[in-house]
Image (cartoon, rainbow, N blue to C red; front, side, top):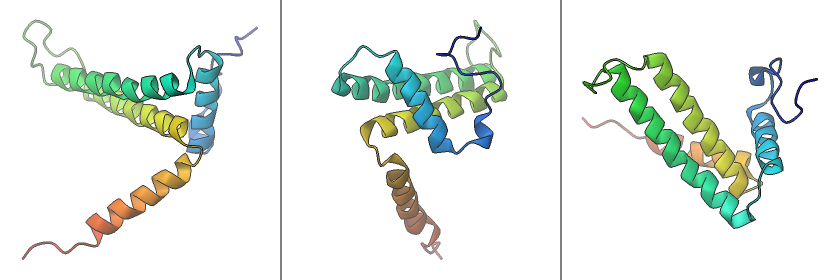
Length: 122
């Protein structure tokens, strides 16, 4: 019998909404959590630093910049680690606010308006 606390191998989040999947991951994490709300938020935000460090490690490995390790990672590893950063950030945002989808959408609109509607110099 499969462990109900583990995601099903047949579950494919590409067919679900991103936020439904994030909510499911938050619920799964919460079911294994022994921390208070503030501690949970702090640790989920700090987890981002860990994940960003893994991106850096993968880039260094893909470029073979560590003489002791050589080319220890691929660019697919970098891609995977970047996805981990995105998922971790969405979970942290969802932990911070129940309005995470709206907060992200509003922020993305502001960034797009600021960046995509600005005139290029010259």
